[in-house]
Image (cartoon, rainbow, N blue to C red; front, side):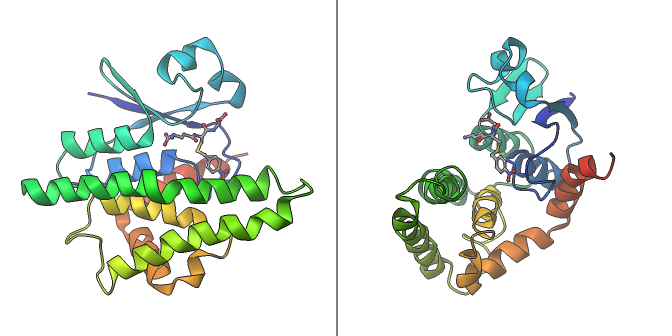
Length: 213
Ligand code: GTB
């Protein structure tokens, strides 16, 4: 069954892997599933055809036969359930890996999104400089808590799982602010994720859009 995802026609990050299609591509590469990409312009994202797939007019989406999904958490979870390679066989270990996926999206991603908004969307507001340190510290608090849990382990709970895929995808968004490098344990964890051949293929595929004029 052909899998088709949507991605930015031209990602604003210039192909640095920060848009959320990268985590879906990475999951598909980890489980060895080929996929097609349908590029979508910012205008097309808000038009009825795309809104039928994604009610919030965003990317990525995922189509497989009659099934159409949005939300990277749901998409990566579906891929991990449907194909072997991203979730452990043991029921308890599987539940813990899924817990880490939720932790990445519900506990770790909100503060880094808030920081991105504070820097990029609110940077010109008169109160921006006063607020920024508060927002940065909310990120640091969560990052420090994750360091305490990860310790010297390579991955969050035994072998690499969909939980790590999602956590690394979220953490790498803190690199641009410099906060990731304040936490060498997490910087090394992200580097381990990025070194995986599946991540490298996913990154190369989304960057290739920018190799052609
Ligand atoms: N919760 C949803 C999910 O996880 O799937 C969030 C999806 C989402 O935010 N999609 C963004 C989008 O479609 C792209 S990833 N935005 C267009 C819109 O809302 O109109 C966010 C993103 C965009 C660009 C960069 N960048 O260039 O660095 C990084 C991340």
